[in-house]
Length: 85
Image 1 (tube, one colour):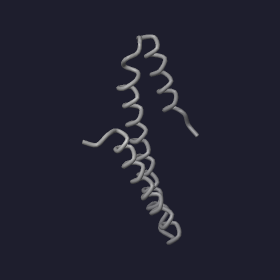
Image 2 (image 1 turned 90 degrees about the vertical axis):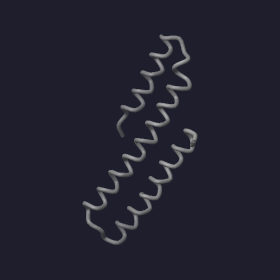
Image 3 (image 1 turned 180 degrees about the vertical axis):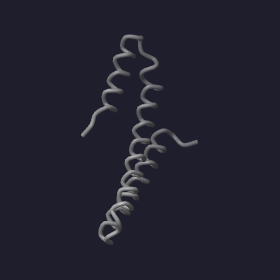
């Protein structure tokens, strides 16, 4: 069974390959719709990697804390995920 780090690394490598493919698509003059479809797939892959990391953090670190500190840490994680560029 893969570790959490291996699963995240696999997801990020998949996203990295998709990004290289998107660059080629742009260089080849592919349609905007095709490029945006692939960009959406990359965003999804990165989101899944983020979800994997946050889930592991909560499972491994936060669940062992006293309730007040646990709420504070979960709140920080939620705010981190809610950030927009």
